[in-house]
Image (tube, rainbow, N blue to C red; front, side):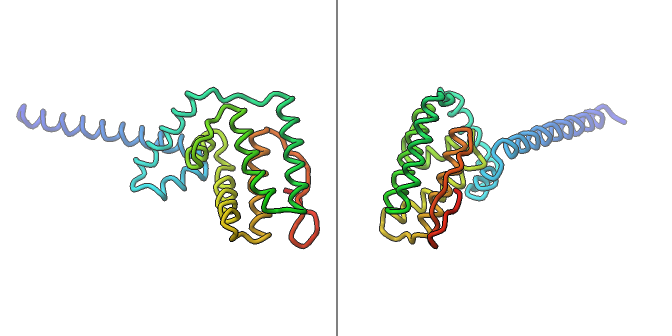
Length: 192
């Protein structure tokens, strides 16, 4: 074989090795992001033009949140917020619409106390998705239902579901489960 043939073979072999390295690096990156973000990974991929674009977005979120001073709640803050949540849930029985608005505001207060910026909703949801990927979809749905409520278009069942969704995020942000009830639309008590 000529020297030129050997050079061509070496270049092809190098290209194959580089392609394999890139493939395995990308696969590992995708697997890591899927593990970190759970269902939020799939949602972001669906809403993006390409998987690469979605993964870049998720990495930007992680980088942004890593720069924040996120902290756990103190025992006093946790107790105070738990008491406020119980009051919001109790209010649901008499005034579901106001209780949902209060729940949304309380989530914002908890997030702010933990160190999350509380700008626009989409940024809050993106920030929450980094550390709380299993409940960010609940937050999005609760917020969607709260927006229906603000326009006067939410049914009592929508409001109850919103409270349940807010509750899952609230529990995750507090780091504990609080066994307090939410009244259902049929007058019976349902745990949120």
